[in-house]
Length: 269
Image (tube, rainbow, N blue to C red):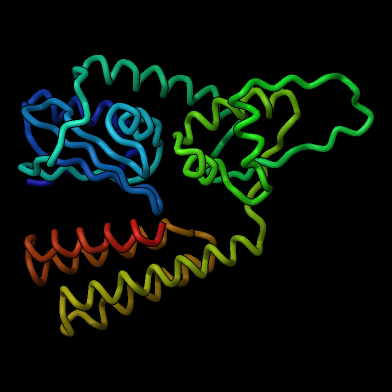
């Protein structure tokens, strides 16, 4: 039986503890906006994880600082490889440490969707010294890439980008801004296209009998996107599609639909 819920209500380390003590084997699927992460347990032990380009331990640490999103545990699913050798205890201790560190970072960096830009330093003549990591980051700051985007470009976690940025923001070398209206419009257009592809997949798996129901949830998602709900509107639409699939076609079809949606979102990101 699947186990699911919100990461706002239960931090990931607590969720892992709940499932691992029972010695279960299965897969956690974690979703946050367009991001997807996976953690596999075998006999209660974490053996493989991935999120974006990260795998293994670093994927666990990256997922542990998510403070929003949804999780679902599907029992019985096993990975095709093992990328984690450390015990759950060691992994979760480090994950908890990073979560505490993120709470400090978030006082200056409230979201990984913020866009760093260099600050002008008129009438300020003090010498600026940057370490190699800061120089590496500076080369990727263009006023358009978000913290998450920079992490993907550098193939490091958003957490590591935030750690590097923290001192630069505090020292007034870098400031953070929200994405521009133009960029937001582009993002909304991408989300509308994504919602359309997901709706088409749902129609394929569920059939014509649910067309009106799917249309209703699709239109509600479009309204949410245009009103600033972003990927949350798409997430809610997906939940409703999965409920409809489960009610009309059963869990087997629902799982196939869920897998297709994950593929569609991975391609879009």
